Image 1 (tube, helix red, strand yellow):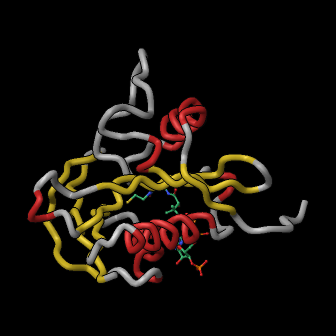
Image 2 (cartoon, rainbow, N blue to C red):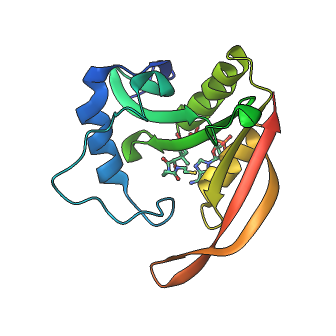
Length: 165
Ligand SMILES: CC(C)(COP(=O)(O)OP(=O)(O)OC[C@H]1O[C@@H](n2cnc3c(N)ncnc32)[C@H](O)[C@@H]1OP(=O)(O)O)[C@@H](O)C(=O)NCCC(=O)NCCS
């Protein structure tokens, strides 16, 4: 069936917890995850350090299609002018339809609305889809930590990206 409208973006709410938790588990892959696959009992998606207000959710055709987590790189006052993208996932059946781009653009806009000066992120060197998305949203590579992670039998670079707001 044709998709008549693009994604719509809203802040997350507590009721999204099971859907987002499931999305994370179902999409786990060493393409983007540095933590081992989650095992039961599963922790809630939201907690004190990750409240709903730090997440934007995309809906496509009335269903949650992805989320982005926006936070601070560190708790330091001297670093408070920077925001960091700390998670981004789009449901596999919704990929390639502009959901990731809409989430990144919305996070950039929200960081700007909060008065931040810069936004940064970390992406694995082998994650070509995410790197292309971030580059097309104005992020540039600001540093590379070579072979920072050992995943699935291979050393993988950690790529630091950022942009001014
Ligand atoms: C990366 C991800 C979020 C992209 O989401 P998406 O909704 O498919 O992306 P979009 O449809 O908005 O595409 C936007 C741009 O991303 C890039 N992109 C998306 N999928 C791509 C792919 N398979 N290969 C290369 N580039 C790709 C392209 O530049 C694309 O722009 P274009 O359509 O004009 O070519 C999605 O693939 C995902 O959830 N991956 C697993 C989790 C992950 O890697 N998260 C990032 C952690 S840092």
